[in-house]
Length: 332
Image (cartoon, rainbow, N blue to C red; front, side, top):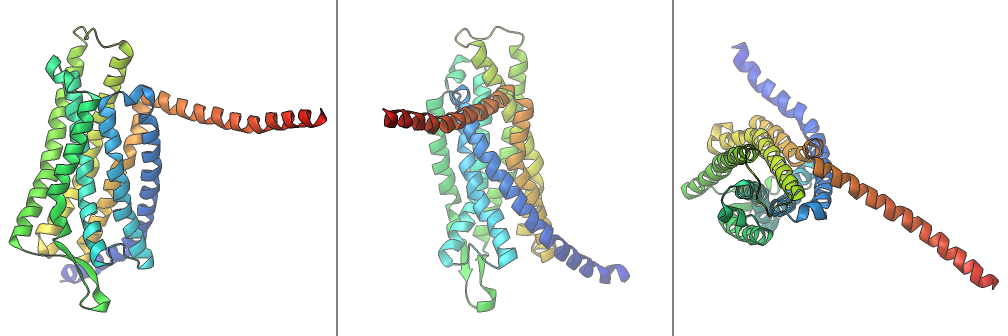
Protein backbone atom coordinates (compact mmCIF):
# COMPACT_ATOMS: atom_id res chain seq x y z
CA UNK A 1 0.00 0.00 0.00
CA UNK A 2 2.80 2.39 0.85
CA UNK A 3 4.31 1.98 -2.62
CA UNK A 4 1.06 2.72 -4.42
CA UNK A 5 0.27 5.77 -2.33
CA UNK A 6 3.77 7.20 -2.65
CA UNK A 7 4.01 6.89 -6.42
CA UNK A 8 1.79 9.93 -7.22
CA UNK A 9 3.82 12.10 -4.85
CA UNK A 10 7.03 10.85 -6.44
CA UNK A 11 5.66 11.77 -9.85
CA UNK A 12 4.68 15.21 -8.58
CA UNK A 13 8.15 15.67 -7.07
CA UNK A 14 9.76 14.88 -10.41
CA UNK A 15 7.53 17.35 -12.26
CA UNK A 16 8.34 20.14 -9.82
CA UNK A 17 12.02 19.28 -9.45
CA UNK A 18 12.67 19.13 -13.19
CA UNK A 19 10.72 22.25 -14.15
CA UNK A 20 13.44 24.86 -13.55
CA UNK A 21 16.43 22.71 -14.65
CA UNK A 22 14.63 21.96 -17.91
CA UNK A 23 14.16 25.69 -18.56
CA UNK A 24 17.85 26.34 -17.85
CA UNK A 25 18.81 23.44 -20.11
CA UNK A 26 16.68 24.85 -22.92
CA UNK A 27 18.51 28.19 -22.56
CA UNK A 28 21.93 26.52 -22.76
CA UNK A 29 21.05 24.30 -25.73
CA UNK A 30 19.43 27.21 -27.58
CA UNK A 31 22.58 29.34 -27.19
CA UNK A 32 24.88 26.52 -28.27
CA UNK A 33 22.71 25.62 -31.27
CA UNK A 34 22.69 29.20 -32.56
CA UNK A 35 26.45 29.73 -32.07
CA UNK A 36 27.51 26.39 -33.58
CA UNK A 37 25.09 26.77 -36.50
CA UNK A 38 26.56 30.17 -37.41
CA UNK A 39 30.12 28.83 -37.15
CA UNK A 40 29.18 25.73 -39.12
CA UNK A 41 27.71 27.77 -41.97
CA UNK A 42 30.74 30.09 -41.99
CA UNK A 43 33.15 27.17 -42.31
CA UNK A 44 31.13 25.19 -44.85
CA UNK A 45 30.80 28.25 -47.10
CA UNK A 46 34.57 28.52 -47.50
CA UNK A 47 36.07 27.63 -50.87
CA UNK A 48 37.71 24.36 -49.80
CA UNK A 49 34.38 22.86 -48.71
CA UNK A 50 31.59 24.51 -50.67
CA UNK A 51 32.61 22.82 -53.94
CA UNK A 52 31.35 19.49 -52.58
CA UNK A 53 27.71 18.47 -53.01
CA UNK A 54 27.65 17.02 -49.49
CA UNK A 55 28.38 20.48 -48.11
CA UNK A 56 25.17 21.81 -49.65
CA UNK A 57 23.12 19.17 -47.83
CA UNK A 58 24.83 20.16 -44.58
CA UNK A 59 24.03 23.81 -45.28
CA UNK A 60 20.41 22.96 -46.10
CA UNK A 61 20.06 21.28 -42.70
CA UNK A 62 20.89 24.50 -40.82
CA UNK A 63 17.70 26.58 -41.48
CA UNK A 64 15.41 23.83 -40.08
CA UNK A 65 17.57 23.71 -36.96
CA UNK A 66 17.33 27.47 -36.41
CA UNK A 67 13.57 27.39 -37.01
CA UNK A 68 13.30 24.54 -34.52
CA UNK A 69 15.06 26.69 -31.92
CA UNK A 70 12.25 29.25 -32.15
CA UNK A 71 9.34 26.81 -31.89
CA UNK A 72 10.84 24.51 -29.25
CA UNK A 73 13.41 25.96 -26.79
CA UNK A 74 12.27 29.58 -27.07
CA UNK A 75 8.61 28.58 -26.78
CA UNK A 76 9.36 26.40 -23.74
CA UNK A 77 11.36 29.14 -22.00
CA UNK A 78 8.71 31.82 -22.58
CA UNK A 79 5.78 29.60 -21.58
CA UNK A 80 7.31 28.11 -18.43
CA UNK A 81 9.09 31.24 -17.18
CA UNK A 82 6.83 34.10 -18.27
CA UNK A 83 3.53 32.48 -19.27
CA UNK A 84 3.93 33.72 -22.86
CA UNK A 85 2.87 31.25 -25.54
CA UNK A 86 4.10 31.64 -29.13
CA UNK A 87 1.22 29.40 -30.24
CA UNK A 88 -1.32 31.48 -28.32
CA UNK A 89 -3.47 32.44 -31.32
CA UNK A 90 -5.46 30.29 -33.78
CA UNK A 91 -3.06 31.01 -36.67
CA UNK A 92 0.11 30.69 -34.56
CA UNK A 93 -1.16 27.40 -33.14
CA UNK A 94 -1.22 25.85 -36.60
CA UNK A 95 2.07 27.37 -37.82
CA UNK A 96 4.03 26.49 -34.67
CA UNK A 97 2.67 22.94 -34.66
CA UNK A 98 3.64 22.53 -38.31
CA UNK A 99 7.17 23.89 -37.80
CA UNK A 100 7.73 21.91 -34.60
CA UNK A 101 7.33 18.63 -36.48
CA UNK A 102 8.38 19.64 -40.02
CA UNK A 103 11.77 21.11 -39.06
CA UNK A 104 12.99 17.89 -37.45
CA UNK A 105 11.88 15.96 -40.54
CA UNK A 106 13.66 18.39 -42.88
CA UNK A 107 16.82 18.00 -40.82
CA UNK A 108 16.65 14.20 -40.95
CA UNK A 109 15.96 14.17 -44.69
CA UNK A 110 18.96 16.38 -45.40
CA UNK A 111 21.14 13.88 -43.54
CA UNK A 112 19.60 11.08 -45.60
CA UNK A 113 20.39 12.96 -48.82
CA UNK A 114 23.94 13.61 -47.61
CA UNK A 115 24.49 9.95 -46.72
CA UNK A 116 23.24 8.83 -50.14
CA UNK A 117 25.43 11.47 -51.77
CA UNK A 118 28.52 10.18 -49.91
CA UNK A 119 27.72 6.67 -51.08
CA UNK A 120 27.48 7.90 -54.68
CA UNK A 121 30.74 9.83 -54.31
CA UNK A 122 32.63 6.82 -52.95
CA UNK A 123 31.16 4.36 -55.45
CA UNK A 124 33.23 2.65 -58.15
CA UNK A 125 30.43 3.29 -60.66
CA UNK A 126 31.04 6.35 -62.83
CA UNK A 127 27.28 6.77 -63.31
CA UNK A 128 26.69 6.97 -59.57
CA UNK A 129 29.60 9.36 -59.03
CA UNK A 130 28.07 11.73 -61.58
CA UNK A 131 25.05 12.07 -59.29
CA UNK A 132 27.31 13.51 -56.59
CA UNK A 133 27.41 17.02 -58.05
CA UNK A 134 26.46 20.43 -56.71
CA UNK A 135 23.83 21.08 -59.40
CA UNK A 136 22.16 17.75 -58.63
CA UNK A 137 22.27 18.45 -54.89
CA UNK A 138 20.54 21.82 -55.33
CA UNK A 139 17.70 20.26 -57.30
CA UNK A 140 17.26 17.42 -54.83
CA UNK A 141 17.16 19.83 -51.88
CA UNK A 142 14.34 21.84 -53.46
CA UNK A 143 12.37 18.72 -54.44
CA UNK A 144 12.76 17.12 -50.99
CA UNK A 145 11.70 20.31 -49.20
CA UNK A 146 8.59 20.67 -51.38
CA UNK A 147 7.51 17.02 -51.06
CA UNK A 148 8.17 16.86 -47.31
CA UNK A 149 6.26 20.11 -46.77
CA UNK A 150 3.27 18.66 -48.61
CA UNK A 151 3.52 15.50 -46.50
CA UNK A 152 3.63 17.54 -43.26
CA UNK A 153 0.86 19.96 -44.31
CA UNK A 154 -1.86 18.04 -42.36
CA UNK A 155 -0.33 19.49 -39.18
CA UNK A 156 -1.82 22.81 -40.27
CA UNK A 157 -5.28 21.26 -39.85
CA UNK A 158 -5.05 18.64 -37.09
CA UNK A 159 -4.26 21.26 -34.42
CA UNK A 160 -6.69 23.93 -33.29
CA UNK A 161 -6.72 26.68 -30.69
CA UNK A 162 -9.28 25.97 -27.97
CA UNK A 163 -10.53 29.28 -26.54
CA UNK A 164 -13.69 27.92 -24.93
CA UNK A 165 -12.55 28.83 -21.45
CA UNK A 166 -10.31 31.79 -20.72
CA UNK A 167 -8.36 29.84 -18.11
CA UNK A 168 -7.59 26.88 -20.37
CA UNK A 169 -6.68 28.28 -23.76
CA UNK A 170 -4.54 25.64 -25.43
CA UNK A 171 -3.31 24.43 -28.79
CA UNK A 172 -4.98 21.04 -28.99
CA UNK A 173 -4.82 18.17 -31.46
CA UNK A 174 -7.94 16.67 -32.97
CA UNK A 175 -8.40 12.98 -32.19
CA UNK A 176 -9.74 10.80 -35.00
CA UNK A 177 -8.75 7.44 -36.44
CA UNK A 178 -7.57 9.06 -39.66
CA UNK A 179 -5.29 11.42 -37.73
CA UNK A 180 -3.94 8.49 -35.69
CA UNK A 181 -3.13 6.64 -38.91
CA UNK A 182 -1.34 9.70 -40.30
CA UNK A 183 0.67 10.18 -37.11
CA UNK A 184 1.62 6.51 -37.20
CA UNK A 185 2.98 6.92 -40.74
CA UNK A 186 5.07 9.85 -39.51
CA UNK A 187 6.41 7.77 -36.63
CA UNK A 188 7.36 4.93 -38.99
CA UNK A 189 8.92 7.32 -41.48
CA UNK A 190 10.79 9.58 -39.04
CA UNK A 191 11.76 7.24 -36.21
CA UNK A 192 12.30 4.01 -38.15
CA UNK A 193 12.90 4.52 -41.88
CA UNK A 194 15.27 7.50 -41.60
CA UNK A 195 17.59 5.83 -39.03
CA UNK A 196 17.56 2.60 -41.06
CA UNK A 197 18.45 4.44 -44.29
CA UNK A 198 21.17 6.41 -42.50
CA UNK A 199 22.61 3.22 -41.08
CA UNK A 200 22.56 1.36 -44.40
CA UNK A 201 24.18 4.08 -46.51
CA UNK A 202 26.59 4.94 -43.71
CA UNK A 203 27.78 1.33 -43.64
CA UNK A 204 28.04 1.23 -47.45
CA UNK A 205 30.07 4.45 -47.45
CA UNK A 206 32.48 3.07 -44.84
CA UNK A 207 32.88 -0.09 -46.92
CA UNK A 208 33.61 1.90 -50.09
CA UNK A 209 36.10 4.19 -48.32
CA UNK A 210 38.00 1.21 -46.92
CA UNK A 211 38.00 -0.59 -50.25
CA UNK A 212 39.35 2.52 -51.99
CA UNK A 213 42.60 2.12 -50.09
CA UNK A 214 43.27 -1.01 -52.12
CA UNK A 215 42.59 0.45 -55.55
CA UNK A 216 43.73 3.43 -57.59
CA UNK A 217 41.55 6.52 -57.29
CA UNK A 218 39.98 8.05 -60.42
CA UNK A 219 42.40 10.15 -62.43
CA UNK A 220 40.08 13.18 -62.51
CA UNK A 221 40.26 13.59 -58.76
CA UNK A 222 43.17 15.48 -57.20
CA UNK A 223 44.65 14.41 -53.89
CA UNK A 224 43.19 17.49 -52.17
CA UNK A 225 39.67 16.85 -53.44
CA UNK A 226 39.90 13.16 -52.45
CA UNK A 227 41.02 14.18 -48.99
CA UNK A 228 38.16 16.69 -48.71
CA UNK A 229 35.58 14.15 -49.87
CA UNK A 230 36.92 11.54 -47.46
CA UNK A 231 36.76 13.90 -44.49
CA UNK A 232 33.25 15.02 -45.44
CA UNK A 233 32.25 11.36 -45.46
CA UNK A 234 33.77 10.97 -41.99
CA UNK A 235 31.89 14.05 -40.79
CA UNK A 236 28.66 12.60 -42.15
CA UNK A 237 29.21 9.25 -40.41
CA UNK A 238 29.73 11.13 -37.14
CA UNK A 239 26.55 13.10 -37.80
CA UNK A 240 24.60 9.89 -38.42
CA UNK A 241 25.90 8.33 -35.20
CA UNK A 242 24.95 11.44 -33.22
CA UNK A 243 21.50 11.44 -34.82
CA UNK A 244 20.84 7.87 -33.69
CA UNK A 245 22.22 8.53 -30.20
CA UNK A 246 20.39 11.80 -29.47
CA UNK A 247 17.11 11.37 -31.34
CA UNK A 248 16.13 7.81 -30.37
CA UNK A 249 15.07 8.52 -26.73
CA UNK A 250 12.87 11.41 -27.87
CA UNK A 251 11.24 9.16 -30.44
CA UNK A 252 10.43 6.54 -27.81
CA UNK A 253 8.77 9.04 -25.47
CA UNK A 254 6.84 10.61 -28.37
CA UNK A 255 5.43 7.22 -29.38
CA UNK A 256 4.42 6.39 -25.80
CA UNK A 257 2.72 9.72 -25.09
CA UNK A 258 0.99 9.92 -28.47
CA UNK A 259 -0.34 6.39 -28.76
CA UNK A 260 -0.75 5.37 -25.10
CA UNK A 261 -3.37 7.76 -23.62
CA UNK A 262 -2.72 6.62 -20.05
CA UNK A 263 0.87 7.92 -20.31
CA UNK A 264 -0.14 11.41 -21.46
CA UNK A 265 0.27 12.84 -17.96
CA UNK A 266 2.43 15.67 -16.50
CA UNK A 267 4.86 13.06 -15.18
CA UNK A 268 5.53 11.50 -18.58
CA UNK A 269 5.38 14.92 -20.25
CA UNK A 270 8.28 15.91 -17.98
CA UNK A 271 10.21 12.83 -19.08
CA UNK A 272 9.37 13.79 -22.65
CA UNK A 273 10.82 17.29 -22.07
CA UNK A 274 14.00 15.79 -20.67
CA UNK A 275 14.44 13.65 -23.78
CA UNK A 276 13.78 16.73 -25.95
CA UNK A 277 16.61 18.53 -24.15
CA UNK A 278 18.80 15.50 -24.83
CA UNK A 279 17.72 15.53 -28.48
CA UNK A 280 18.80 19.14 -28.88
CA UNK A 281 22.32 18.11 -27.97
CA UNK A 282 22.48 16.39 -31.35
CA UNK A 283 22.11 19.74 -33.08
CA UNK A 284 25.31 21.25 -31.66
CA UNK A 285 27.55 18.37 -30.49
CA UNK A 286 28.43 17.50 -34.10
CA UNK A 287 30.24 20.83 -34.50
CA UNK A 288 32.72 19.97 -31.75
CA UNK A 289 33.22 16.48 -33.18
CA UNK A 290 33.89 18.01 -36.60
CA UNK A 291 36.61 20.17 -35.06
CA UNK A 292 38.19 17.21 -33.27
CA UNK A 293 38.09 14.70 -36.14
CA UNK A 294 38.03 16.74 -39.38
CA UNK A 295 41.46 18.18 -40.23
CA UNK A 296 40.21 20.23 -43.19
CA UNK A 297 37.25 21.52 -41.17
CA UNK A 298 39.60 22.47 -38.33
CA UNK A 299 42.01 24.20 -40.70
CA UNK A 300 39.23 26.18 -42.37
CA UNK A 301 37.92 27.25 -38.97
CA UNK A 302 41.38 28.53 -38.01
CA UNK A 303 41.79 30.30 -41.35
CA UNK A 304 38.41 31.95 -40.90
CA UNK A 305 39.41 33.46 -37.56
CA UNK A 306 42.81 34.48 -39.00
CA UNK A 307 41.08 36.33 -41.84
CA UNK A 308 38.79 38.08 -39.38
CA UNK A 309 41.80 39.21 -37.34
CA UNK A 310 43.60 40.50 -40.43
CA UNK A 311 40.52 42.44 -41.54
CA UNK A 312 40.11 43.86 -38.07
CA UNK A 313 43.75 44.95 -37.88
CA UNK A 314 43.50 46.46 -41.36
CA UNK A 315 40.38 48.39 -40.38
CA UNK A 316 42.18 49.74 -37.31
CA UNK A 317 45.21 50.95 -39.28
CA UNK A 318 43.38 52.54 -42.23
CA UNK A 319 41.90 55.44 -40.24
CA UNK A 320 45.33 56.28 -38.76
CA UNK A 321 46.93 56.48 -42.21
CA UNK A 322 44.09 58.62 -43.49
CA UNK A 323 44.52 61.00 -40.55
CA UNK A 324 48.24 61.23 -41.25
CA UNK A 325 47.55 62.18 -44.87
CA UNK A 326 45.05 64.78 -43.78
CA UNK A 327 47.59 66.35 -41.41
CA UNK A 328 50.25 66.48 -44.14
CA UNK A 329 47.81 68.13 -46.56
CA UNK A 330 46.80 70.75 -44.01
CA UNK A 331 50.43 71.66 -43.34
CA UNK A 332 51.07 72.10 -47.04
